[in-house]
Image: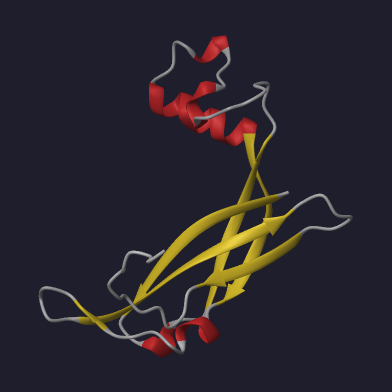
Length: 126
């Protein structure tokens, strides 16, 4: 089994891409399938302002399980400069962190696209 999440980083200089840290948060609340952070609430919190309820829920039900440190320097080598409307040049790296479960240990992989070109699609001829 795997879990994949996408990330994007922009830098003005290609050499500025270094180590990024991804935090994996685990849920330890009472719901069997939580979809939103503010779903798991205790009844005594109903009288508190919504922002305090949300903070309480995050602190009690969600915790950091571990951190993944990814080195983006190799992935950034082939980036092509882009230009904003203002003329500012930047580099953007879109990548995925993939975590593999089910083995005796967890494995994390970094995935990115490199040298992708856009072309016209032609219909297949049978």
